[in-house]
Figure 1 (cartoon, rainbow, N blue to C red):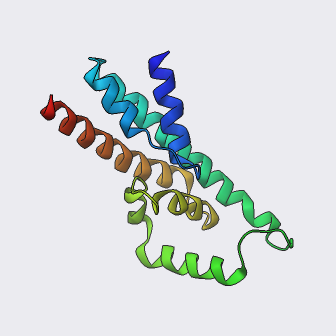
Figure 2: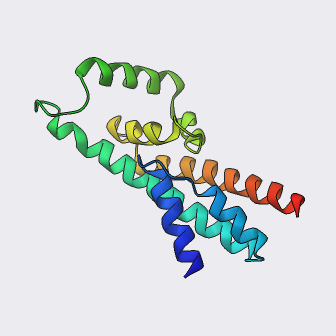
Length: 140
């Protein structure tokens, strides 16, 4: 049940909802849960959350002609230019607070191939959780 809680916390943290999974992860490390299993669960949940963002971005353009659509054409154009400027490699930084969630969303808007998206996001998130776990274990 603990690992399931971490999975869903990491998943929600990767979506556009404001939530952090790091505190729970470190707490579980201090409670002697398996670092490898915690890394795998947190990485999986957080990567899946980013996949949800990608899907929402991919599908959102269906409604861009509606009055209630939250983005103006200029905002979409600016975001697309920024994404193209930094390219696919920017997805390695999908874990960065504040910019990571919109980045994964706009990867969907830009119709980045899912397999490329998944590989780059998973690498970045797995490295982030790996470093976090390593640092927490050094402090024990």
